[in-house]
Image (cartoon, rainbow over the protein chains, first blue to last red):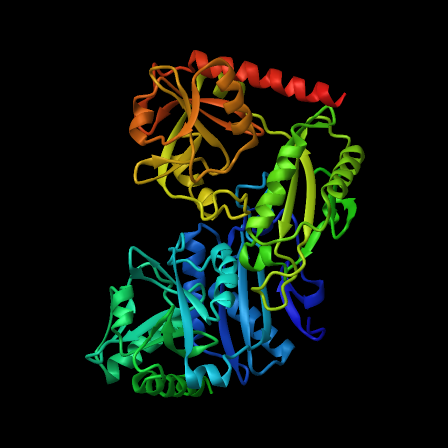
Length: 282
Length: 282
């Protein structure tokens, strides 16, 4: 634990090592809560309003109340950014079910905000692409970013054992998302497609889709495991990872087994979009 | 919070109000953990070995390690029972994913043990029976008692709105369990049946099944929603609730709409079995 870092808990900013929740909190008792996560570069939070939109939406779906207005929340975030002085980093907001009196019914939510260094994908992974495995599963509340990663964490062993980078959820052959990333393919005819259903509305996913629409045919739609086997390119997107090319699914090599030109071009566009977002602020 | 109660956390027994977890714990970050719960009467923990079996099994399924041998764990439990002096109560053990350094990979588990008063079902509910509603869902790891109650808690509103007592999970018409209870029917020919698949191996469920086998035809098997509509009786079982008769499922009245004779007789046998278990100890 970085001893210089501060976190927001219990309504105040205090040293991270002093940030605790009482064990009656419903996150500890019943794994009940939502969260969100966004990236900071040179002190600038990227696409902050999009992430806040989703945080409030997750809370609303799970019937929790964020104990601050959007402006109040932003003010805490900017205070934390200033205090931590961690130019390249990520901020995580967790909203729990609160200190439940009966260990089941949510009470006033506890809000936790932490900031930590970024773990970017290794250069080699972006340059050579990665292998993924698949697993039959759909998250309980795909549109909400709940803290429930029981399945994703349990599958870490299968990912390691399969020498894979991540695991792609699917049901009845229809693909949805990774535990923490969204998924895209580029079809043989050059269309960029991302699953439309049972997925978290990733902010990077949305940005990518908009970028792809400017340069290619691009759509949200049904993606099957067969579509992946027939795809020219595949990649995953996430806030921290941006784009990681996928060159193998289970035993099947995708395309020619190297990151494709559309994938590489979209990554360049995405980096440019981040620059644009930063410039807006300045 | 009862100010006189003690809890076990961080390797020691301390006042419940001082029992905290650092926010880096994987229960808070990712809802990752398992737990178990057993009942105490006159200081005697009922069927303790069965509950400990299941606790260690849940941990093993979710790849967590209980940081004590069974005898070590029992010793802590008995110390806590003595310290709290709460003759009629329940003990909850929670084993979390621990203080994760990357917010995703489990580390050395944190073990929390708390004791609190029992909330038994109201007399009227046992005497008149209750209504249940149904919902299409199966828990991710039915054989493990994980802390993930995201769905169960979210469904509380539907339960309240439907003026129901609880919500029964099913998929493709096949019934499994309640969020926190097991399910039984008594068929028209007098056979006691409990769902065999996708259910937690409840200790009360197992005791009930053994008791039912002594007095009736009884089996684990497939139970469909139609089987419930055609059943003579239905009831739920749990550690705290023992047996609660079910007289209505959604809009359908079960049997003659009152608790059946088999249900009532099994409750009597179950209370007697608890007395037997207590006598063994003494």
